[in-house]
Length: 288
Image (cartoon, rainbow, N blue to C red; front, side, top):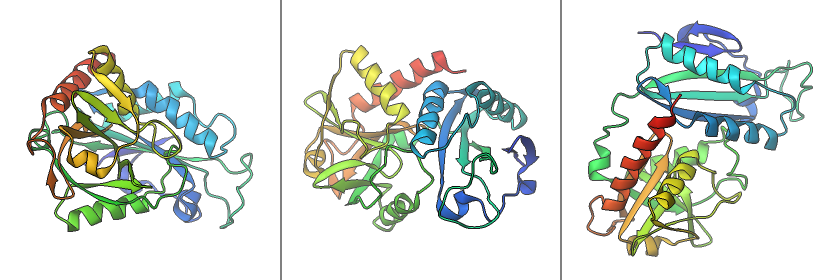
């Protein structure tokens, strides 16, 4: 089945969608993106993703109302319907558009409209992901990304390289380390659990302000779990009782090995399992 995608106001078969070679997303990585999960044909945490999208656009100095939240929601729902998506994700990307030639200077926003692209990704095993039962292995690598990691830009080359480093080492993912402390995973926020406390780096320009992160920490506090927002080291992770990651596509996923050392028992622990259960249960109540 050929997917229907959205491009600049039109719904098209994926093989008919075309973008100019002068698009600044292609030439300059001048764009932002969001990924919203779909469960049972409904969007999870849509409001959070829409709010973060608006912030990312503002931080990259996009001017004007690029797209209204209501219109964005309607497009998401139309793509779900047209592609009969039950479980999976919708990827959204907005770039500064395609001027008539390559230039470092931003094009005039009155003359060049942003490029808006959305497409679906089917994943029927998102909820019942077998990896949640066995956990992930991660390695640590130096964090060599640019300084504004709080903006969800399409500059994903180094995270992609990190994924490949992990694959070459026989691991599932990499945790990025800066000044001796873990920042986050290549495409997720990172956590450890020690003596019942959930520990994760506090928000700043150093990490992405994860939508799933915010929801999981809120649910943890509501469940009377202790939460500490502070830096932690790889050594602390290896000595922790549990570790896990969160993201829109993995929800809560246990980490059982860090740089070759088992975390806790080397198997998924009860805190991560409970948080995954709570997250799925609570977010489905507000899915749209």
